[in-house]
Image 1 (cartoon, rainbow, N blue to C red):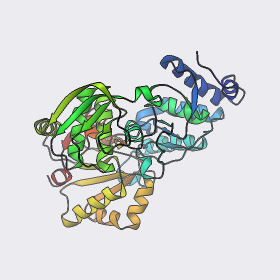
Image 2: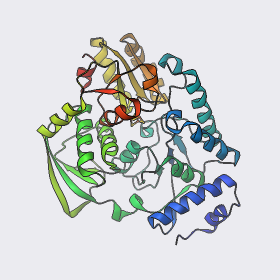
Image 3: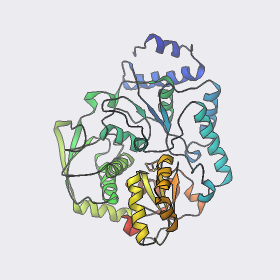
Image 4: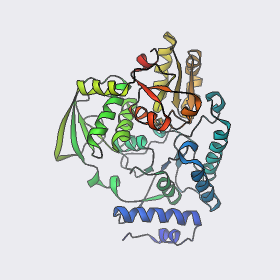
Length: 391
Ligand code: F3S
C-alpha cells in the first residue's frame, strides 16, 4: 500500500478541488501498479499531448473539463511541441479548422498555469534540472536527455500522468527515481565513425531496436556535443523505449551491472541502417530539428545554405525563444533567402504534413525517420544535411 502524507490524503479526499482529486487518483493508481511506497516532490513537469493532431477533440474536451474543475499546476510546467507555429501557421499551410482547435488546446493549458514553451528541448531554453533532481517529464527524447545527460530522474510519463504530477507537485517513487533501476544491463562497444547528426540518429535507431527496453552503456565514443547526444537518445527512445543511457567519459553517471551483456556495433551496421532508412527519393521538404535545434545548430544550417542554396524547401524546427534569438543574430534571414523557414512551437511529426501535400520528407533524425511513415504517411529521405538538402 502507498503511504500518503496528510496533505496528499487531503487532496485525495477532494478537499482542494476536483481537478487535483482526479490527478491524485491517477498518481495513486500508477503508484499501486508499479509498487511505489510513497510520493516524492518533483522540481518540474513537461507535458506531452499538445498537438491537436495527436489528442483530437477527446483530448481537448478532457483539458477543458480539467480547467472547469479548477486545475492549476503546483510546480514549473511546460509544453511539448504543438501542431503548428503559433504565429506563422498560415505560412506553413496549416488548415484553418486545425489552427482553431490547436489554439483552444493552448488556451486550456495556459489557464492551468503551464508555460507555452512548446518544445521537446526545454533544456535549451532554461529548463535544465540539476543532477539527482526528481522531475516528471513526458516527451521521450527529453526524458532520455534529462536522465542521461543531465543526471536528473524521471520515468517516461504519459501526457495525463505528467499533467497530474504537475497539478499535485509530486510523483510516485518507482522506476528511474530509484538507484537500483538505473543500472545499465548491456554494454555497446562502438567500432564505427560518428561525425554527423545522421550518424548518431542511425546509431540510435539501430541500437534502440537491438536493446529494446534495456539500459545501454556505450564505450568507444570519444566525443559528442549535446546536439548529437539529444539525437542519439531520441532515436533510441523511438525504436526501443530507452529512457536512459550512459557513455563512458561523457555522461555524468556510469553505472553498469557486473554481468552486463556485451555487443559490438560496427561500421557496416551503421552503413546498413542509413541505407535502410533512406528511400533515395528527392524530398518535397527537408525538416531539420528533431529534437528541436539549439542556436548553434541553426548557425551551422545558416552557414551551409549561405554558401549554396538547397534544391528543395526546408524547415528548421526549434523553440520560440531560440527562433527569436536566431532572428536577432541574422540566421533566420539567411535561411529564408535560401528557401527555408525557421519554424517554432511544432515539428515535422506532430503537424499535419500529410494534409499539406507533402509525400517525401527529408530528415537527419532517426526518430523522425521512424515516425514519419506511420504518423504522417511520408516516404523518408534520410541522410546528412549536405546530402538531403542538395539531392
Ligand atoms: Fe521533438 Fe517532434 Fe522529434 S517532438 S523529438 S521534433 S518528433
